[in-house]
Image 1 (cartoon, rainbow, N blue to C red):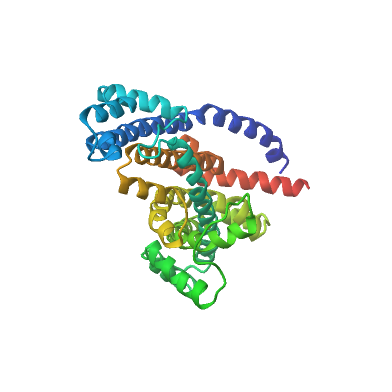
Image 2 (image 1 turned 90 degrees about the vertical axis):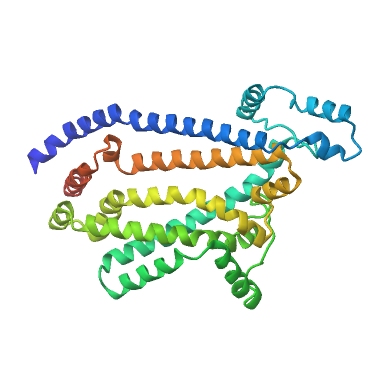
Length: 359
């Protein structure tokens, strides 16, 4: 034990040095990939608007507009310039927060988008919290009951919940919780800053409806990872060293097993935003999906482009956050060597055991 304690400081310094050398590579790669995807997405978003052949002059001024009137309005919106020039100008302004102006209201698109975006972010954020809590609880319970009745029940429930569309769950929740029981309102919205309690009453049902699919995926992935980790040698060694099961689970095993589940959670972010299109309609939420729908009905191209670009940016930022969480959760992932997970867990448990012995 004395030799082990003497070697620990040197091991920690070596580990910190390795992490400092290898950490920037995956982070830099993720940022580069994100920038590339964002650029391609912006090009596709702008291209779809250009291919729509929408004419703001004819749409806004109506059938009585003369060709000269239409030309003047197109010039005011900059649509008489070459498409590459329009794209570069649009993207440059978008990167500074200027998404142009609506063809019909002439209001800044950024004002409309950033007024609706907090609705979606708050609902999606609450849905992610619910998904993490339900998925973690289900995955841990199923893993510790591996092969038992509880494991089979949770697996069956996840299989069913993973196939249910969000709008079906939303309608069922409204019918039971709102109409029959009268516990929560069936629609409407209050900003969190205005009244947190009222916000939670309005956000609970749509967030729960959106979270079930993600929670089922997290539970299944976490259960599979935990079953493998609980059989690892370092867990057996930890038990022999006298560490409690709770300390081993939450201090080491869960940290090593949560990586795949966190990745699945990151993949659920686009589905949450996509599901909000229908969910917002059902619960009458004034979010970005409703803004996009109204703009599509009016052929208001700047608003459509703005909402799409902001949505892509939100998804990409969420993926960066997930990657950062993976690196923080499991330092072995920084080197891209998944086989070192058990070794790093064993070393961490040795450190933990030595600290417990020293105390």
